[in-house]
Length: 467
Image 1 (cartoon, one colour):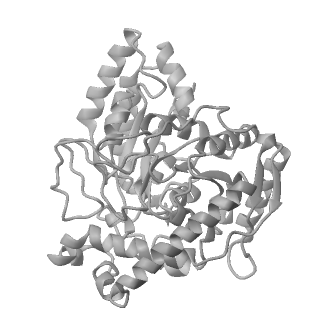
Image 2 (image 1 turned 90 degrees about the vertical axis):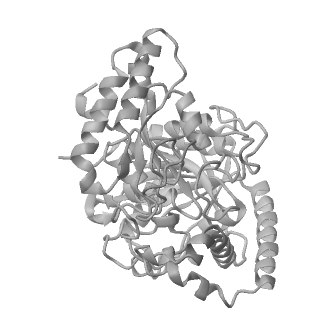
Image 3 (image 1 turned 135 degrees about the horizontal axis):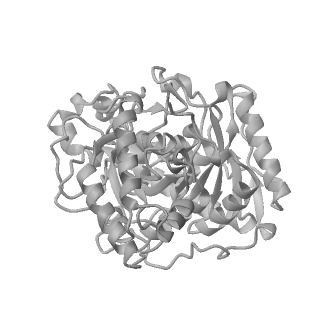
């Protein structure tokens, strides 16, 4: 394997080299840390680098591998974690400047599970302040500055897992943990040319992670392939006594656990490109859909259940976020956030009554019933992810992304899993992508289909030229 390829290699590839002794976890980790030292300022990928911890974990992994004590495919693999996951003895600032002295004394469950699997923590990735749950209009809504896209640093990486997207796309980590309340894994995956999985709500414990909107938040990886996402999700999924919402039933994520691809029935959900969206991204999506058909996937155009999913998800996320960050609203620290929208959230929410909230909850339950019925007729949804490539970092995001997200709104309201996949390039050679969405706890279907697609394409193997 050529040296330059190490930084963009998959977990599968690196694990094979590490286990065979042809690659040392110490050398690999030191190489990533040196790249971070050289390149991080260019992309604002990391908020805090854990160099000493990483080298300690790398030395432990090297000793265990030398003694044939293999923990699994993540043993010796360097990764990064979004800076809303607690890490023992390491600052965890939630994307803000005023929490940079917040040092937890315990790890988030997902960090413990990755450590148990032998993965090596390189550091904490930058993020949009409070994961964007109090709203933001510009990419610089982060104590670390705007997330800059490795494909073009004048463009955004996507939020709120901005640093996680930048770290993986720039070859500064093999994978990174992100979170999604509504779009924060799929967005940076689309804009950075990555593969990312938004798991079913409750599949992964959120214990030790910042709460944005409790009934919406989900944890998942951004990585280089569907196979890598499967590997990471398998390590972090499962019940947790620290999180009562964590699913307590075994979910099969292994290959072949779902129906064969040729037995699946997919709903092709097109978006309205007549007024918004970029033709290059549309062409990339249509090519991806054609590739799935050629791989044996049966597809028919279908309409999503009608209902105010965007309004319901937006209202409930907003009121939950007000509860989550009440302390910072009360003591005035919210005014120290970079974006001017956050301090206005109480004012904007004043017209919302308790009755409005209850009605939204009931509509949400109705949407969930309709989607359960939808998935009795279809196994998976195939649809665009974003209708345009990454916007400039200094552009108002409301102007840069002037279109709705109907599938994302339903997925947020119903806790549905989604897999973001690269589909080629759009305007200015920037990455374009699409998404697959399935019924709750059908991640194996998404992975099997995603792996079939990536076995036929090379989009996930492309990466920016990092000088």
